[in-house]
Amino acid sequence: MVEFFASEGWDEFQNALEDDYDLYVSPGPVIGYNQVCIGISKKLNYKYKSVKTLDISDHFKPEFLQVDIELEEKILTIIGTRIKSQKDYITKKNTKEKQLEFLKDHIKNIDNEVICLGDYNFTQGYISNIFGAIADCWGPRINNDYYSYAFNKDDHIGLDWLLTKKIKDVFNGYEDKGKSPFATYDWKFIDEIEDYGDHSKDDYLGIDGLPDHAILKGMISLE
Image (cartoon, rainbow, N blue to C red; front, side):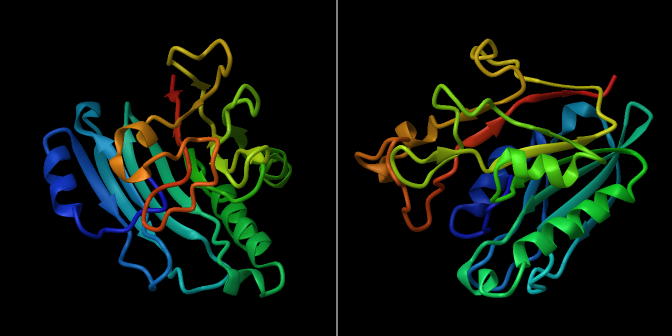
């Protein structure tokens, strides 16, 4: 879970999930930026190892939270991230690219299995070129309305991706797997939350305080 901020309703959210999930959250951010929240199902019977985060005020590092767990006698590193793209960062030369390079070097130096997902603010092709030598980039096929973010009508692209290292398989176990075998984007929240009004996934959503990215969903097999 990324592009998250522990604001009004956070306590109720935690209470609703506490029986089924352990929640890990990065520290409160500089105003205008985001936290990262990672939820891990208690049914996995995993062992907690460590948590790492970053100083997000550093222009050359992404929003970031890493949780290391032991699962099925393997160490699994779970990373939630977002490549910052706010205007004050963009004005600094190569800031977004520097964030990607930091993330690449970080993942390269991890020896165990890694899953790293979030909003990279780049297309899949670009991410694959950056990380191709050390990790695989997964996401929905960007056709048949499989896009994560609506900039403007007729300009739909995907920006939310999953990077994996030493992971056996990534697959879409939902009903649309025939159209998008590795993952899917879920826009159902638009229909379920009253504050979206007459908006649809075909609109530029740009609503303050409400998500305008789809939910990236998929499955991972470690063995």
